[in-house]
Structures are given as structure tokens and as C-alpha cells.
Picture 1 (cartoon, one colour):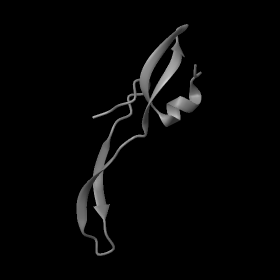
Picture 2 (cartoon, one colour):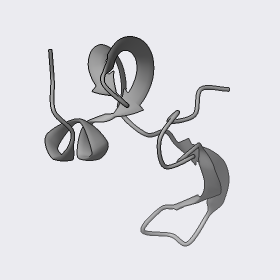
Picture 3 (tube, helix red, strand yellow):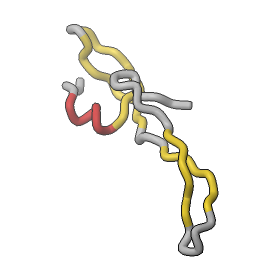
Picture 4 (cartoon, helix red, strand yellow):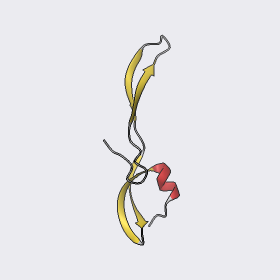
Length: 59
């Protein structure tokens, strides 16, 4: 299972609920992308979610 290297965000489970109120298990996965960013003055390849990608300095 993929997780964000910065914030630790990972998959969350729950139920899909139909109009008839039938429930089936489903998974919500974060949008994880590979990116090269500056961490402590050096370039580093990380797997981060797109929310974190907006807030960090890209190379």
C-alpha cells in the first residue's frame, strides 16, 4: 500500500452505499506521485500526495 513520504497519508476503507442502502467495502486511495524535491538542501526522489506536492519546493 502506497503512503505519502511527507505526511504519511494512506488508504482509508469504508462502505459504498447504494440508493437501496446496500453496503459494499471500498477503498479511498490518496493521489500519490513520484517527485524530485529539495529536502534539507539536497535533491531527493519521494512518493508524495498531490496536496503535499503543492506545498513543497519542486526541483
